[in-house]
Length: 222
Image: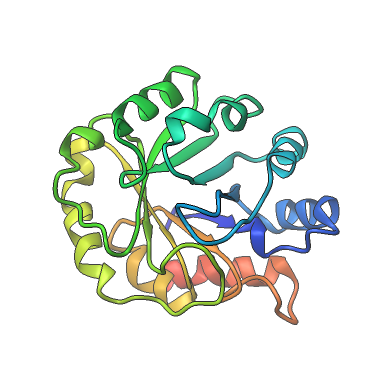
């Protein structure tokens, strides 16, 4: 099963980013998930512009950048500038009056445009955005902090998106409380990407390579 695994770097040791980056790349991470929070769209802050600039310079794998901010078209220029062609940038459909304009700007820079959906946001009314977005990030917890429980009611929305992903040509990614059971269930159905945080990867007593291998094995057992 050709899944993609993205460690959530807000859960990594912020005092040892160089070591964390190296260990995760050697362990087989497909990219790094970078959460940018403005303290308004979500009631928290996560990684900084400086962190993003560092990962864009140092990482050998693509970045998976999640902009959790109000009106990203006004403020995202400095967050797009450090990125490399092929990096993904997600904006929230709920966060801007003109989400299509934000997606077009991302695509015009050679980046991969993505739409993120909060648990309480349905897939209805996204048809036009799905014509532009190449990835859809489905939040399975309420965004803003790690360590929450998976919200199973999101599975109904996920099924709706899986049913049309081939028609519109986008890939699906899940973010929030992702464990081996979640991967085993959803990878065979067609979910491509999984963001790994404290449920499966960080804060464990096992090395990253063993944990990432276990996540891939879960997809194969599905």
